[in-house]
Each structure stands twice: as structure tokens, then as C-alpha cells.
Image (cartoon, rainbow over all chains, first blue to last red; front, side):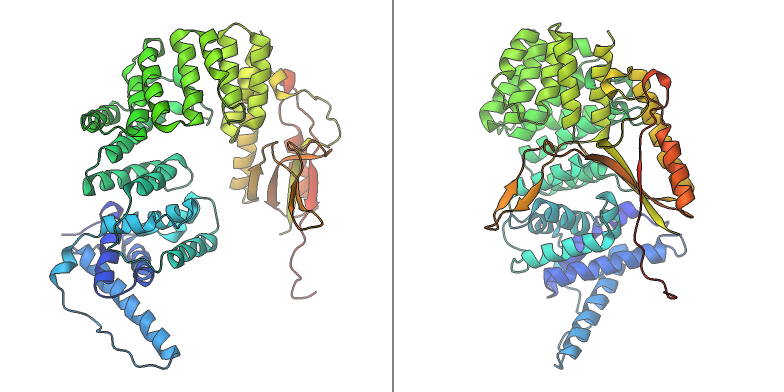
Length: 385
Length: 134
């Protein structure tokens, strides 16, 4: 029987194999390097279908990675002119089957790391992506990404793999990956969902489920969010028939069981808002009153200015444009989307000239070209009336 | 093959023949312009002539160190400068003539009233590495 190269099987093995090497005595940084080498070797050997993937892929990775590790230790030891005392192939003990993936998650999201470093290290050591894939996804040269990961590992070099970690920091890293969007061959949003799913399985926790639900509900709308030419479609104008109903259903189910635990967190509350949007078959059917209530709770929990801004827009839908503008008066005008929200509410209030001016200002402040074009067209539309 | 920078400016370039801020165009004219730019980039890529293309936000600031070595930041968005770069293409082409030809095509991007904008592009050669025969 032949086995085609199966990236989906290969990648979850990466953190497990790192764990095996660490349990055999390798330090994390060296183990991670050795497993990355084995991963690249796997791509080279099986990636083009030249050779069949072995039945025991994990065993293959452990063998190759351990050999790489030994080679590295030997060459370093030779350089230092010292004798080497490392067994080439240790006995397989009971710990070889332990799954250290959660520990690797924690270490890669260590609070000493900058967000960019934590993201890169997580994608390589937990996600099982090659350095080149991570580099392409973030549009930086491969050498730059390799350096970033290497420095990240130096930062956590004093930490052992069995220290307790913080799920909240892991969630923040995964949410950053999710929000990076879609560039190149690696679909970072899908990868963030895969890793969050894995995290939710490894550590039962309502807020991690909340994050998973939030990602699923946002991801469900992706086919409707951009046109074929890359232009943005705002939520109200999206073809809701394009939403992925299976993802919506899963997101809602995950959220409901999370909320039933009565340990509310910001991801659960954001997911609740996303679920109400997903629930409306037509934009006009959106339950804005309930959305405002969720935003009230979210604001009480986080005090976040961004939540305050989103709440003002929801108030505008629930209670009218004037009420929305009144709520917006309490929001920091330097927030990135303040002008766009203000433009929207002014148009809703019938003040088209002010709305057009605000949309043009919002376009100048946009953080990506698709958003800039969208906002410019809103201004253009109003200027042509 | 030599490399050239095709530089787009928000301001600082000479006034083009068909000048009008984009929010004064019709939404369809904006779409037509963006489609042209998209197609231009894809064609450069297909020709094997594209190195890099980036767009810059008009926001930002000027930064320097003052006499005491402290950070000094002037008010954005570039209130104190005449020139404001909007983005660039880095192209790797046969030579100067081809670079000028591509800049001409870019200048004819459609704009207001469906007419070309006649935008001015700044074309600058990159310094290369010394060759083996230098």
C-alpha cells in the first residue's frame, strides 16, 4: 500500500517530536532545529511524490531529527575538542508516546517574547511550517525569518518545557495569526483555526472555545467578504448565501457550550456578536438591540476603546444615527476606524457632504489598499449624488 | 539586467493633465483604475520584470535625533514637506528604454471621466554591483 505525502498528518507531529527529543535530553532550541531539519528532509523526500511516505511517519521524523541532533552535538563537541557521551539511539521508553504539544504551545507564547517572535516560533514549532513557509506568509526574506526564530529561541533558552504556561498568552498569539489574513500559499487564518482547535482539545477552557467560535464565525464569511477583483464587501452588502453554513453551525455550537460554563471572556463575547450577525439571513434582520447588549458586557469587561467604537455603530443601528453619533462622541477620535464609523453614521443621518468628507479622511488613514479603495469609493458615491 | 524604481507620488510631482482627487471620480472610474493597476502588476510579473511593488499610506512622520540624541518627531502626515511618495515598482528590465516605456503605460492609467490620468512617474536607476570586468 502506498501513502501519498500528507502534510495534514505530518505537521501536527512536529511539536510531538520536539517533545520526544527534549525528553531524551536535548534542549528545546536544538531539538526544534533538528526537527525543522527533519521536516525539510520530509518535504524533500516525500513532497514531490518521489517516495512513499512511511507508515510510521512519527518514528521516521524522530529518527531523522535525532540523527541531526547528534550530528550537531558531535560537530560542536569536536570543535571544542571534548569527548562526546551521547547515545546515538536511546531505548524507546514510555515517555516517547507522551504528547508535549501543549507545553510547546506555552513555551512558544512565552511572555518574554515579542508578538512577532511568538507568532513565528509558534507557526514553526507547533504548526510544523518550514521557515520558508512562515517567511512567505509574512512577506519577509527567509533569512530574516530564520533569524527572528533563532533569536526567539535564545530568549526562551532558560525555560524548561515543563513549566506551567498561560493559555491567555497562547490565545493572543493565535488570534494574531488569524488576523494576519491571507497572503501566499499558507492560509494563516485556516492555520490559526487548526491550532486553536488543537489547543481547545488539549486544554478544556471556555475562553479558548470562545476564540475558536469567533474564528469559525469570521472564517465562515470569508467567501463573501471580497469580490473576485479583491475589493471589499461590507457586512451589510455581503451575499449571505456565500457564507459557509457548516462553519457557522459549528461556531455557534462551540460558543453555546462555552457560554454555558458561565466564565465569560472577551473572545466568547465577541463570538456572541459574530453569532448574531451570522444568525441574520438578511442584513435588515440583524438583532442590533441584542448586539448592543453584548457590547455593553464586553465594554464592562475590557474597557477597550475599540469595543466602544463598535458599540457606537451598533447603537446607530439599534436606536438610530443620532444615538449612534452621541455614543461616538465618547470615543477617542484617534482610533483607526473612527472616521469611517463617523462617516457611516453621518450618511445614515442624511448629512451627505459631511459623510463624504469623513470617508475621504478615513481613506487617507486606511491601513491597507483594499480598505482605502473601498472608503474612497464611498466618498466618490456621495460626491456624485 | 538593470533595475529601476518607478516612483509614484501623492504630491510633489508636476501636475498631471487629468488631475482630480480620486474621491471626485465616480465609483466605476475608481474600479477601472484599480483594475488597470492590478493588471499592470500581473503583466510585469508574467513578463518576469517585477521585483517588488508596494503602496505607502499618506500618513507617517519625520524622525530625527536632536543635538542631545533625543528622538524628535515632526507632525505627520508630512505637513512640512512638499513631496509625498505613494508607492513604487521595482522592475528588472532590459534597460532604460523599457523602463521609460513601462512608466508611460502606467501614466496612461484610466482616471476621471474615463480618461488617462497622465500621472508623472519618477524613474530612477538602481546602482548595481561592480561587474567582473569593471
